[in-house]
Image (cartoon, rainbow over all chains, first blue to last red; front, side):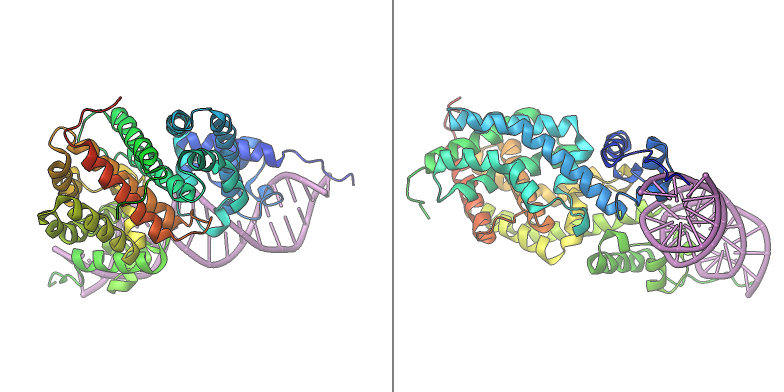
Length: 194
Length: 194
DNA sequence: ACCTGAACACCGTTCAAGT
DNA sequence: ACCTGAACACCGTTCAAGT
């Protein structure tokens, strides 16, 4: 008779999914495991998320929000060059703290599993802000892509275990960031040579 | 009585897997689909590959070999700087020609699905060779990681559809490569400034 | 020596039936 | 209004039985 009260919530489901993700990778985020974690059966999840892909998208968006909150303050550094270096290090630290969630951000997922353009833009705004202060509005987008691509590539290779030739990996990252930021500073205002 | 002759082969199975991979992504490389493609049933595949992961690893290794053959000649360019730029463009072209196979190369796969260290090293040797000629043996590894990380990050973001802020993406790539190579050349021999 | 059907334990997803 | 068991169509994988 009395309509059944909700026994869980979207936020609780997302939180459970994130826990499972970090604990065992994307493959262990099954509808059944998530449901068990929040105390219901798998079919009940479909009341809040139309598909597993939609749940993964929600997890990705939540991760993106955390990342945005972490990076935002760094864009206010009065020294744009130092701010960009700090941001690159904070980005890497975030990835190491949440490796599986980080993978989700740049993974080639089905369209339904991707965060919205707005959410992505909000999280990456600090990079664009600092890039613009460093090289001016005209080159800002290309500069931001340069540094983002390097950081993403480097970190994802690290996480995937691709760097197997030894050496100090952390040092390589700092080296890369330093070279990039210096190169961008030197480009400022100067005519491109080619 | 007469022992049954083989109706397929490892190389045929790998080729079928690569076709399915490019046609529909990793998810469509199922044991059943691969088996159907070569004219047997799924259980027969286990005669040549102990698991699906092992088959994926074989596909990845085959891709890596193709990539190595494509890049190797470029390492002989008398102008190391030009060679490195050409190599970066060839690398991107390869990725666009085989997007799903390319993803496999830097994807965080189960250990059983990863190509061996030797195969990886052979395919990436040209980058290391050119980097060494550009910045000397001491900085070669860091320089190679810098350019590889940028290229991988940029291309994987492209393929994943992350660049949604407009602009000329190909131009951004060339810009990035040029800035990197120039920066590395300027670093040559010069004491690091920090 | 290789191939197969049948079976098993898992998925995501749907839906009628319960409260 | 929410939750559930049962069912369906798929997976990867195993294995006894066929040739």
